[in-house]
Amino acid sequence: MKVGRLAGTGQLAVDDLPAPHAGPGEIVVTLAACGVCGTDLEKLRGRYQTAGKIGHEPVGRVTEVGEGVAKFALGDRVFVHHHVPCYACEVCARGDTTFCAEYARTNIEPGGFSEQFRVPKENVERGAVLVLDDGVDWDRGSLFEPAGCAVTALRRVGLAPGDRVFLTGLGPVGVLYGRVARAMGASWVGGAEISAARRERAARRGFDLVVDPADGPKALEAIRSATGGKLVDFGVAATGASAAIQLAYRATRRGGTLNLFGLPEPYGRLDVDLQQLYLGGVRVVPTYATTEEDVATVQRLALSGKLDLADVVTHRRPVADLRAAFDLARDAESSLKVVVTGPAYAG
Ligand SMILES: [Zn+2]
Ligand SMILES: [Zn+2]
Image 1 (tube, rainbow, N blue to C red):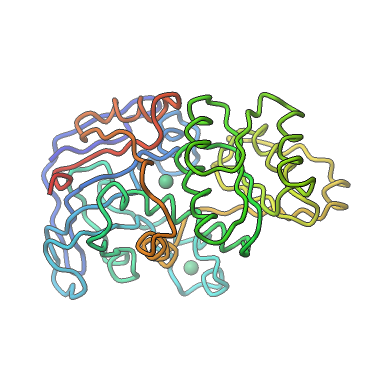
Image 2 (cartoon, rainbow, N blue to C red):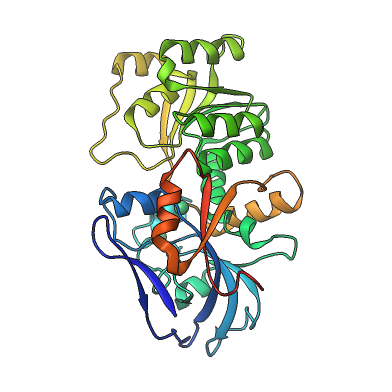
């Protein structure tokens, strides 16, 4: 089988390796599709301070079931979450499961850009494998993880029906966040994006206002006037650039919430006047990754018709062309979401 992996900063490799087998309690999944995430691009650039495994949004078909696994059968179409929390520590007990110290310890092997991968026992047992409904195709299923991150974020910040949301960064995850916010009841969703092609795409796909952050004070003025001077309840930084985080902060009303959602630049700093932050009462809430329940919510919202997952995946490349997939994903002018496909995609 072909396995795509990181081979050092700026280096990708596709190896031929023997297919994995399922040990007791494990399953093996044959890849249909796995999205290239912004964090994968940052790992390739050597700018993400975590383990260097790439590919964490996979969907595929169960092709081997280990001893003692009763919940899944051969041929099941599944989404697999790469991390699971322990559900036993104090952090988990408080509901902050994605910040559990154990959360990032488990992972699929060898990764999501592999034609087949093994799912560890902990993931199988703790609900990380979700059976896809027949109404969810591979492209939509491959968006469950990033859309789940938006559900987790909006749940943590406490979005209520009628709230206004403004996002900076309208790449695939920003677009998904906007749609999830809409599905969860937001009454107004605006965004800022530096790529002209992505601005145009977002404007055509349901955003109430799309601004160019390069317009400086004019961008903020546009948000002010579109919201009747009220600004937004939730400013969301869906990209890591410090300037984008600043704009999301400035777009947030007094007493509102700034959600740090996209991976911030390494050693990035938020330059705010602390007295203004204090007097304005803006909460700063970082949210990271997603949970099994929130991914299940994505499937429910998608099946109910509230969450539109169409037209997000724009390009597909097989595992053997991993480099081309990454190059396309980095090219904001031509792509939105790029997925890497495996042998199960056709079936
Ligand atoms: Zn991701
Ligand atoms: Zn825990």
